[in-house]
Image 1 (tube, rainbow, N blue to C red):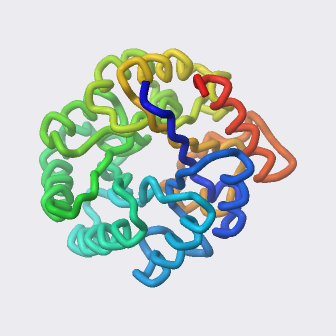
Image 2 (cartoon, rainbow, N blue to C red):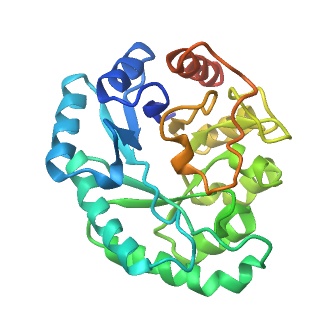
Image 3 (cartoon, rainbow, N blue to C red):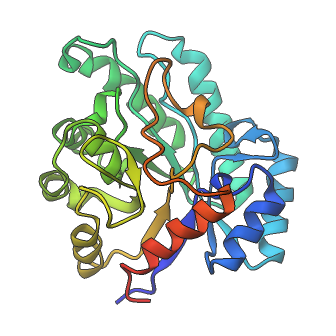
Length: 281
């Protein structure tokens, strides 16, 4: 069995790099899926700031596993040329961070319309991302997310069949919030999965610690490990944290609140404990 490596969206513990390092260190987590840090999104970092972050993490025995970017989290009819420029800069930043992965999405679609009407536009834009990343050494990873083309497993399969180098991030809670049964989604997508986002939810969409919801997280984790999988990124969402509003489309519900904690640190630590209880560490 491969050594299991844990990463986390540590901005849920603290908006500052120092606090993120402290949260990761006390919980024995070595990897960071860098999303927001010191008031900046990962896509906004300068090369100098990225190198500073990398050094601070390295000095603490930590590293950046993935750039948890918002790329692809724009409306399908938004200006894509500017977004593609942002993508290219984020690839450069990811390399400066020493990371090998970028998390991305497949574009918000108009509510109430058939997603298949936008398939060609989505694939054209994802294809531009894939082409722009060629030769960079960075692995692009698509995350299922409510409201985008790849919100349901069947459409995620179409993405990965079209772009074999674009890998899958499997997020159980996001599927629950879209009305997708997670075990059937896992069967469709497990051959494409690069790593798991550990986030669980109740049938009503409220996020709960791993193993406490309807996501079949223990079964999926067990099968993933049996298939040779070894990397998990924790995304707690157990309490509202700085920057959450910027991750949601206007009018969407965050699905946060079933479990509440006295502080972001306490919520983060509880989420880590729930995940570790499911792993053969």
